[in-house]
Amino acid sequence: MTRRDLLLASAASLLPLTGFAREKSLQLTGTVLYSYSECSDMILRVTLVTLSDGATLALNPPRAKRIQLEDLSDPPVLDEGDTLSVTGVDLGRGKALRATRWERTPAAPQSNEATVTENTAFAASVTLEDGTRVEGKRLLTLTATGYGPGENGAWGDQTKLQTTVGYGTVAVDPRVIPLRSRLWVEDYGFCIALDVGGAIKGMRIDLGHDTDEAAALVGRSKRKVLILG
Image 1 (cartoon, rainbow, N blue to C red):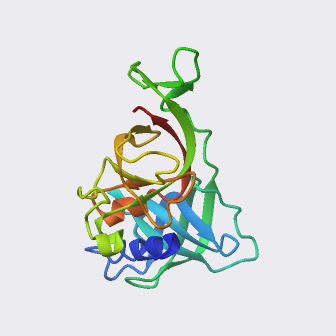
Image 2 (cartoon, helix red, strand yellow; image 1 turned 90 degrees about the horizontal axis):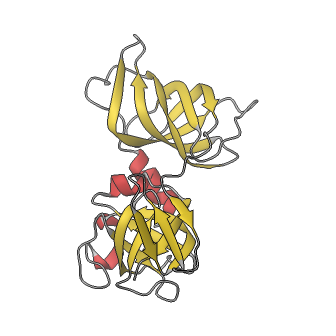
């Protein structure tokens, strides 16, 4: 199953929610996870739902929803991380919200959660938000995706090294990062390389999560990865 297929499967989970059965016209606000088809079809990480009577519901944790833009005369130019507010008609469970109005807010420049530095004493180090300095052997920039226990094919919820797939377990290409390596991953935290994947080749890393829904929210992004040892 491709990353797009996984996102679409996750996107089916948002609506209908309890109390929304009679609500066809909705406003969804969130950040763009993934877009394709010239930005007319996308996955939105929804954090706020506004009903037709103005009532709002904050989603915690956020949920993914597929969005299709109906009027393509002026499609927005979207980047992952942009905030998008869309209003339209929900086509039902497993289907998209067909949006007729949208408002885009470009993603703000990211404030680094950690400051990455190179120095002569160590190959690389990171300074966390609390001021803790973590020193490592090597610093890489990898393309990160997410996976959960239901996305592991014949392995089920087991990793290559026979541990359970979950948060803190990551899949790597052993030619780039040796298995059993301890790592720090930007916007994820400390973890261990305990798994491999057929699509995880070269400069890629797959971040384990406890549920497939949480994994789908990762999208695809560049992350700093510090190899600790």
